[in-house]
Amino acid sequence: MQFENYLDENSKFGEWADLWTERKTYGQSYKYCQSIYSIVKHLQCIYNKPINQVRTIDIDDVILKLSVYNVNTKKPASRKLLKNVKQTAVSIFKFAINNCENLYKNPAELVEIPQDTVKNYRKPLSMAEQAIVIETPHRARLAALIMMFCGLRLGELIALQWSNIDFNKRILHICQSAYNVNGNQLQIKPGTKNGKCRNITIPDILLKRLIDEYLSKSSKTEFVITKSDGISMHTRSSWSRMWQSYNKALDLSFTAHQLRHTYATMLYYSGVDIKSASELLGHSNIEITMNIYTHLMNENKIIPISKYDQFLKENFGEVC
Image 1 (spheres, rainbow, N blue to C red):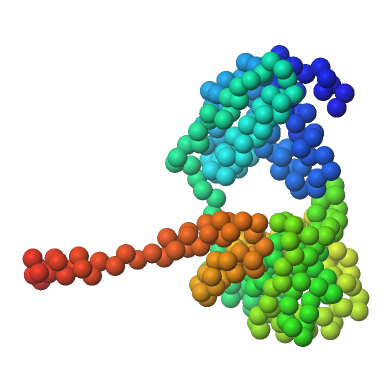
Image 2 (image 1 turned 60 degrees about the horizontal axis):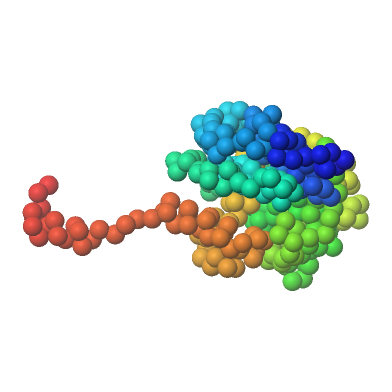
């Protein structure tokens, strides 16, 4: 950070962005840092402009181009990504304004997100696909079942230990998660994504499988889900290899997070209220759960037209 004192309103946007990124990611997890880097990267086309010459239209161009085509995914960027890119630009300008005497305006605040952008929606597994997951033998099956029937995030699953399971009370205690410490290695840290612990009731369909696994493996390892050696905690690469093998064995293609979304969907269909579902899923904000429930309600909405139908019969009779 030695160049901090030399930045002013004539310094390049990229220099301020790099300094903001350095401070934003300091001491954070590998996963968090990577997410920040990937968002900031979308702003690199304005890196060489002096920050006092960056206009709203420059950032607007970035957003519009992304809304049409994201080079990383080869398809239009999601609304969530567009909002993240805009907010990052806003934050970089705020940082520069607070640390520069002659910079006053934040052009990123005036950028508008296009209304017809794609919304991220993780499709849950169908009942037929869930049956395949339940019935197909594979060493990844237990991991899939825990995520599908208890809604764990991948990091929470990898960090799950036998000591976190109360078989008598049928409870999973979720109080830790695995995070990236470098490109491949994972490290367990206390807390979850929203910083809170939560307890999840284990359904009958999963309980017996967990007990059987406990009786066969608990003397060898503290981890519920392990690498192929049956002992060690997963790395990013070992998990990726196992998951690719699993998808191939099932002849399906889905992510670990889709299983968590499947759990949320089953909570909705089984009548679990939004507040309870939010607590079970460990969402930091009930609005996240509300968005899932609202999508499912809209997807299954049938508008009653009995009064309209009766009106037509009374005025036109049975015409068909």
